[in-house]
Picture: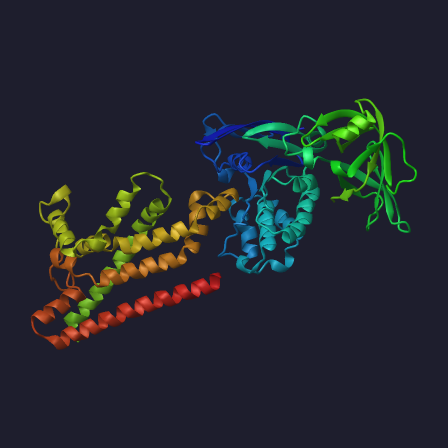
Length: 358
Length: 218
């Protein structure tokens, strides 16, 4: 499989970025980091918007930057979605969407335009002026505009950060659709783990200008080494990709199959065979040495403790293995001692809540 | 109105039109550079562009006369007392009135639309014409009208380098001056009212159009 290889350096007075990584040239790669960690700079450098960035960028077999060669921005075929929609105020929505077509004359583009319009649900907005749209609608147009320019690489720079919570919730399903239906690889920068877990397949962690983790999202989220505070610790969670195996409308539950076993989740208009991504926070999993039959908890799964990592404030994170599925449980230090838990022990994971992301 | 005075008005309009076109062609790249450059000595260029705002026109005219006169500076052909000389003088004299509104309009457009255009495949030149020019349209309108109107009212520079050659350098303001000198207040009045109405009409037009542009753009 082809890959995206980046080795970039950039320095300002108070800040240095040195990003060296290789990621698959398919699916969405989340770039997670605190404010000031260099996420936006990294993304802008890949697009060619930071002329002072040194190093190399290879997208599959195509070289965008190497040594003294730097392909200009307008020749890089990126689809860049900025924090602000940045629509052209003097053009209608439709003219904004067609803007890229004027300069990139490829034949498949009219298809890309129609696909982008329907993917982002813009049919009824085409003749409007950007100023008459809500913030969420403007950002949808901006995403469609990036898709319609037939990019080889999509770059999302915290596209939800300028929106309030309600608009974010409105826009997220569209981003999930983009992720599901589009073949173009992308980088999605965010400081919010909750956004990244919804649409990323792969995850990069960026801390103080350096890549501190790089791998499939499930691996990065469950790696006990990654306790920089970005993931793990208080925010520790796992995502599990599952398929709906059966639904029971009477009891209102659905059985879903994960690589390591089955889980029961709330049945809410699910279809058998449908693929879902579940998110389970470490706070929502407790452990027991015996299987409690008198518990209200639905999902009680046999697992083995694979690793124990100490986090701050008297808490520990247990890495639990169930076949190929990994779960994280956050328990107190005193519980750890009381139950005398060690790596290799068998425990029952009691899952209190499962969030269905897609 | 006498034919010679009418010709003076026509010449004034011609001078203003030609000067405005030259100013837009030269002033646009200059204003763009002033809006985008981070050169540390850029302020010197800003100051030089603003100079005609404060300098007595006669000072400017005097140096232009030295430069344009026969055997003048830089081996220029003799341009004093010619229409071409007047155009060059007017361009320098009206420069700030064109460059400053353009520069401010370009600054207001900002970097984000340019970056969006570049990521959508537009070269810098394509981005300039498809994004910056339409977004800065009110600035262009203001610049053109101010340049035109200011050139129409020019007097001191013309007096120094143009003289009073009918059909070549005898513009309306000079004609008014000449009528007043000859105590022909009626003829002076006719010309003065005409200039007054033309200037007001132009300015009213630009402010009216810019107001509508804002409403449409809002």
